[in-house]
Image (cartoon, rainbow, N blue to C red; front, side):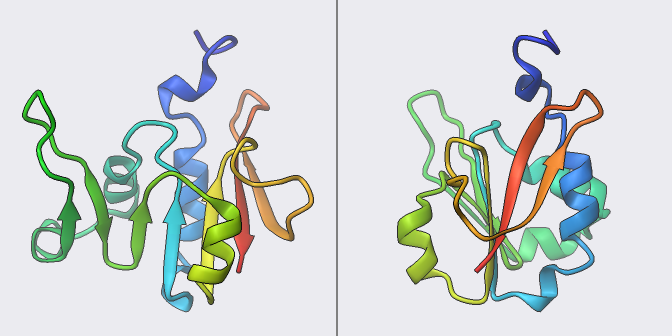
Length: 127
């Protein structure tokens, strides 16, 4: 599993949180790809985010066919598919965090996040 589908185990999110958590308040938005399922859960966990604050300040999607919703934002974090060209204009003074498929190689990246297995999970762009 870790060789064929390393992203399916949420590897790299802990490393991403350790980079983003200390600086997220310096930006208007931190937009994070949801390509690897629902990373907000691990952001809350690794940041030790106050549950009462989360309950007061988050947005979710409407329930789907099976009755499930997804958290789309809390605080200044947004979780969605990355459309890099659109987001560059739409979100000034923000971090845009996506995968190799979402962030072009030619972008002005701040940092790449690798897992302990050497796989590049995220590209961070300071917009």
